[in-house]
Amino acid sequence: MQSAAGTRLNRRGLATRAHLLDVAIEVLAAGDSEPISANRIAKQAGVSWGTVAHQFGDLDGLWVAVVDEIHTRSWTPDAGPLPPLTGSLAQRLEAAIDSVWIYLETTQGRALTALRNALPPRRADVLAEYPRTAAALDAREHDWIEGFAYLMDGLDLDPEKLDNVRCLLPAAVRGLSSEREIGFSTRLDVARRTLAQALSAYLS
Image (tube, rainbow, N blue to C red; front, side, top):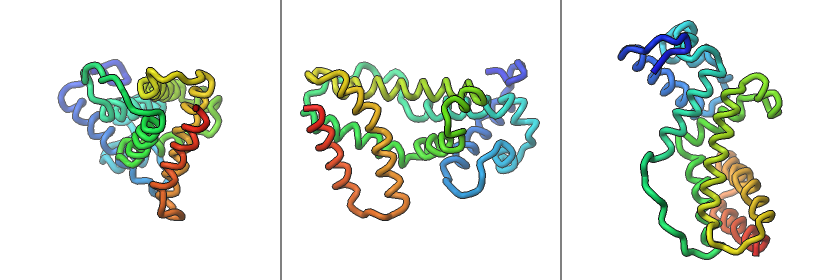
């Protein structure tokens, strides 16, 4: 493992890097109103901005490392081939919705959501200002594409409609998840089931 400056990290350097990533994910997942910044992360980690810059280079380098660390914590390596699915369309859609719903409540899910919200709202600006972070987020999008394809494998469905649902589902579940935070609705289990039924009717 190398620093942003190209030097090989010793044991102490690796520990510092791991600590900074821990703190960054904790700060992001906290979801408080204080602005998220590299200086805040450095201060909370008890180091200087120079230490952060040595490890990650700039804010783009820090955020891409955070996205990669979240991915590492979220997925089990070498889990082996996934078993074939036999459930109905509605059951598979419920599984997809539940998987996103559960993930959004994890530390990693909350941190990733907060990071997305902290970046510029326009994709063109993210690509211009944080190109490596944008590429890392695109890779996470690819994970979702593969996971959704697995859940729908073997079903005779319209490819265009299936792609539409794949694009809609994460955003719809994030919207329901925001209701969980705000507390306007207490029957979100009903809302999730209704979403699955509506998408199943659309695809059928």
